[in-house]
Length: 180
Image (cartoon, rainbow, N blue to C red; front, side, top):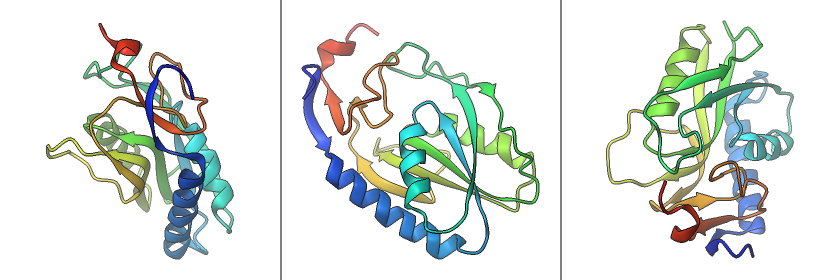
C-alpha cells in the first residue's frame, strides 16, 4: 500500500465485481442500441476502459476533457472544456462515464453541454457517488459505489495528478494534501 494512503476503501476484486455488475445493468438497457460511451478525462479513463471491456455487445467510445480542480483539493467552481467529444452525438444514445460524482456541479455542466448536441438519450455512469448530505444538481443513472465524504484516490482518482494508477481506491492521508 502507498504510504500516503490511510486505508483502502475498495480493493481490486471488489472493484472488478462492481464494474461487472454495472455492465450487466447497462447491457439490459442498451443491448442492440450501439451506445456511445463518452469518457470524462482524465479520471474516468480507468473506469471507462474496464466498463467497455465488461460490456458484451458493440459500443463506440469517445472522450471529453474538462477541468474544475486544477492542482487543488477542491473545485475552483468553474468548468473549462479542454477537449469536446470528436463524434457527432446528435441522434445517438450516449452514456457519459465519469470517475466520481462529488458536488455534481461539474457533471451537471457537462451534461448540459452534451444535451445541446441533441442526443436521443444521455445517461450518466459514475464509479463513485460521494454522499455529501446535500442536494446535488444531478444524479447518476448508473453507479458502482457510494462513498463517504473523504478524499479518495486510486483507480483513476487523483490528487494533483498523482495516485491515479493505484489499483484500489484509498483514503488519502490529510498530510498528503493539507494546505490546498
